[in-house]
Image 1 (cartoon, helix red, strand yellow):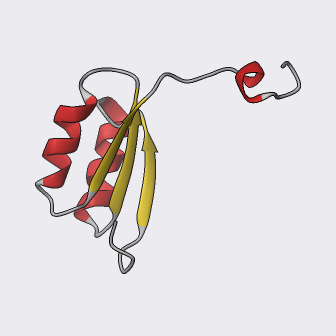
Image 2: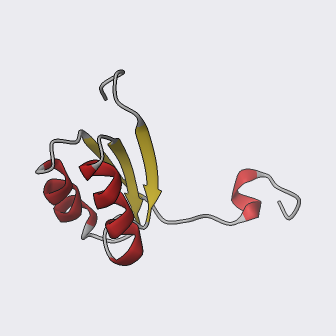
Length: 73
């Protein structure tokens, strides 16, 4: 990531509202850390890189409060 550019973390970045938000950030000078649980994330990241943004894609499923040792864990 470029230390001179702001960084945005976008969940659900592979489609829908998440992708639209990621695209807006990318087009407005942000680098991105995009997350989604499906296989479309790599294609979305490729398209977002076309804007000139640096994009790191992390494919992961969301956890539950118990997974992080929260009150339910």
